[in-house]
Length: 301
Image: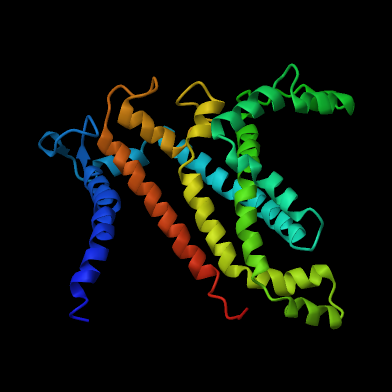
């Protein structure tokens, strides 16, 4: 072991250095910044002004930030239910032995390959368009004039339209994770259940779903991370930075750091760092709660 010590150090040093520079240092710096008032994110520490917990108190007392957190919560909860349900359904169907499995899997995953900008533009211009949009054409052909007259990009329906479009683009990613988990389950379980007279529905609830507990935890964690980073879709669905229907904490952070929007009169990178710390705490809390509620699998594959 002693003879190999220089070799071990030589192999570990690049990884440790990169981890410290790319991950650990930015995290520590962001946490430290959250206790200061800083005009520019690149300002030297000599220009920082210590304010203690004032940034956190200011966030809690800011109505626009609370609105952004409420929007994020709705995206995470309702969007998560929609995405996880559809993704799991598709995963079960694709692993049931249907023909052209690879083709359907590629088609469902395709929106994840397309740029979010292009995908959002497609929804705005070709699906939600009040003149020739897909929804208007479909509802008109069905004689549902009241639904065809809905202005999906108006303030009343903008959040729903945003959520539907975003969920459409995220189903394929989580479907692949569910698919990989289902394919790990041995066929012996299903064969024994079939012999005992269990139908497909019973097999799903008594075999597939219980054995996917670890995969479900992974999907919830990944969904939480991507939801917290919700930014591009919000910007594309609204030309107003501080639109209460589409604003999320990441947009609010952008406003504080770069001084964007009519509601921000001065830049405060420290307040933006505070938003980042709050979001990080939220993700960690969701991870811990998920691990507490969904116990470790006691089954073996």
